[in-house]
Image (cartoon, rainbow, N blue to C red):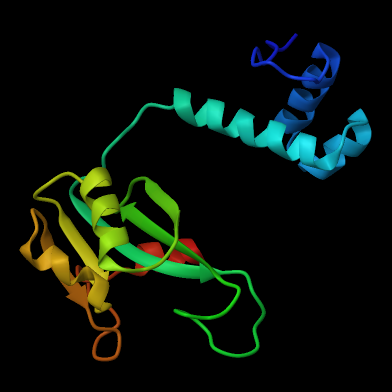
Length: 171
């Protein structure tokens, strides 16, 4: 039997247990809500709290060595402007340690003031950070990192200088 989520809740222990079962099984929150007999928003919030609880128990790690950084945009409709500044898109920033882990974060914008603190918190100093030529990464040139820029219009990649790993992650 699963451990019941101890935070004060209007859900009965049985409802909580059944929602946890559906969470573990990979059901969507909406499907679980319908099966268990609770409101969809209740199940969505419960699933989010479970994710937060799981994330709080994971060991923290810092990326080191060779790290690729890139931002991407998801959602919205295909018509109109694409990429940076497109309406209805969610900006996501990612860091990938080569042959290692990936860190992603939803960001409000792709400005230096947003990206640099994330890089400083998640990447160990003296690491090599590979980025594209987006101007938000200019601050890395004077930071604690070795910074290599990849100009996609001149050279997409060579053996060492590329950001193909994080670009592939987005795909």
